Image 1 (cartoon, rainbow, N blue to C red):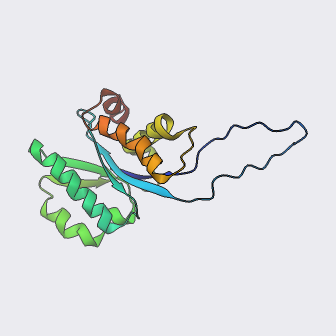
Image 2 (cartoon, rainbow, N blue to C red; image 1 turned 45 degrees about the vertical axis):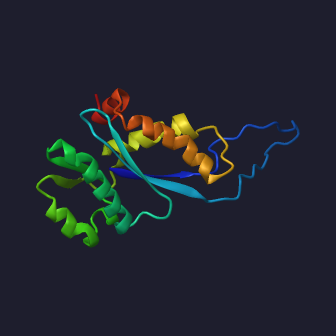
Image 3 (cartoon, rainbow, N blue to C red; image 1 turned 180 degrees about the vertical axis):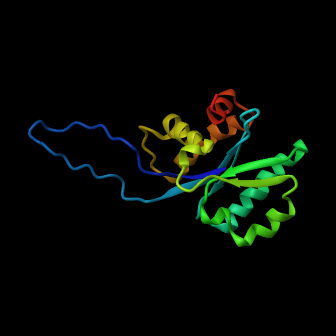
Length: 169
């Protein structure tokens, strides 16, 4: 389990610059607008579960995603271990009673501090950026959503690439 922000401004820019201009100043669109997502990958088949979070990541939104994830995985009737980083809202007191209540079938296992390279979902975000947002201009935040969510929807059905990417095979 992890979270990500996709920002509206682009990552690269190509343009013609006059030869006498040695150090051109490139102004990006003046926005800090972004859309966030929680996401998790089931390692056995590469199914991706996500939830858009347009406002802020906090204990309430984390609990909402955990409940969504629990609902999606409850049909398997197997114990689910969710690997999460050490963001404060993953450990929040707000949802600790809920986590304790479903601990027999749904457990959060926390990674060591400052180790994003161990979180498999980080690889999914990197792949999403490469395939959906890199080298593109997004005039609106809705265009960012329209670029990433179709990919997320395809991954919800299961994906061998995601399975291999996150399982480290």
